[in-house]
Image 1 (cartoon, rainbow, N blue to C red):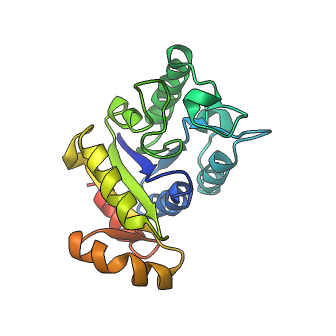
Image 2: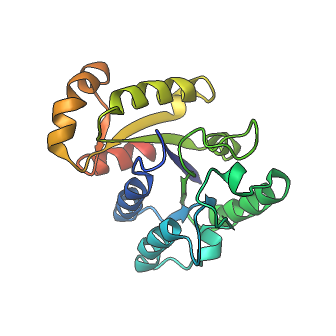
Image 3: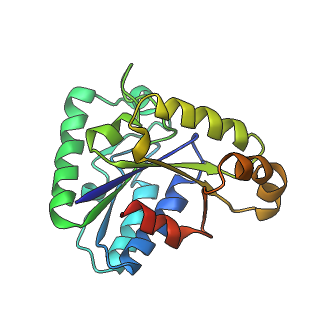
Length: 210
């Protein structure tokens, strides 16, 4: 069983977009992949991000419910700690849900809440779920002004907290003109082999399942 944890440089970095593309590509490669959104905040009726991922899996024939995909939700659109996350109780639900998906699928694709260091507790952050599940880490950055700073600082912080050899990063590029003009010149020189989504989705998916 494999696990991939997708985090971001911040809220709105493009994690769900990346997960949608990856989930589809894993199935294309013959890997039965389960989406897993352990925590979603800002949920009024149903978790929107988790529903998007669930639909892709259902279209591929997976038998899943929204509660299996997203076991912990909060109405307040804020960091989990602020929204009401209780580590003692909610981590039990998350571990049980992960174990259930792990038993049914070849791979569990985990989308974290918010940015890498969105707090679940005072000293327990979204990125720490990757260690909890012994997952490879994929950090997503988006194509806007400030991306270079966000990439560098988030990579540095993650590497100080987790195993470096389990770490990958990709840029979620929806505006090629902006990205090529304001971010790519430096990032390409600094990281010659980083991935762009959706352009490199096949290469990225294959790398993550090695």
